[in-house]
Length: 255
Ligand SMILES: O=C[C@H](O)COP(=O)(O)O
Image (tube, rainbow, N blue to C red; front, side, top):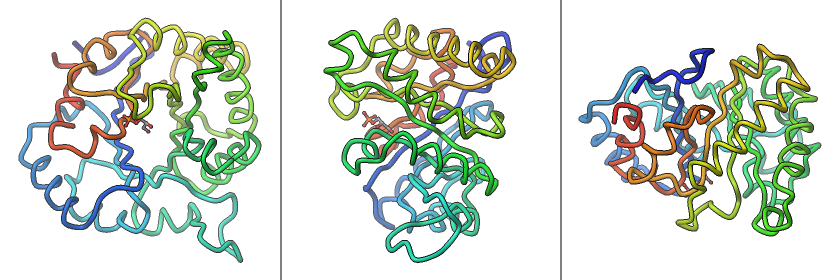
């Protein structure tokens, strides 16, 4: 199978989100395994590491792997103890930031509007953004999946100046770290609706070109079937991105 999806030739993107995991020793080990593996170079790979390891990760990982921070604040500098800015992320050589992850939304109570402001500042600072959306289990069970995702999309889209530097990650919260993956049909349905939302609310060109990636218990065992869906343009992988066989997910479109 090709590593571009859809009529617009969207390049498949596989992100790893390490969350608050890893050490210099584990990074060096992973880098050794990944460096020795054959990786499909048509696939864009982005590794979201804890911010204080970004520089080390950059030095260790294969040069073709890009790096991402997992969060950034909405201004460049100032009295914001504990925060990091897009300028700092760029300064250590990372090109991407993950924003609006459900753990930021639900554990750290980040509201839609703050996430929009962070997206705006990250883009204005020259970063590329993986912006996450997704519903809770109770929202899905209440039939509100699309309403929730549309609301989150609206808050993000209102702050996007350059869609070519934005990837949308659909991550149903009930599938994150639970071992319960959305079925390929469930993922495709929401991805197609997000693309339709972009067509209606932004433009047909943006809808066709924007990559919509899936996250939630993606593993080597389920990535091939998910990758075959028309509107699944890649993955944002949590736990399985901390393992040597993450390369099997990167290479899934070859299967
Ligand atoms: O950002 C990644 C997602 O939260 C998925 O995590 P997971 O693959 O461990 O379920």
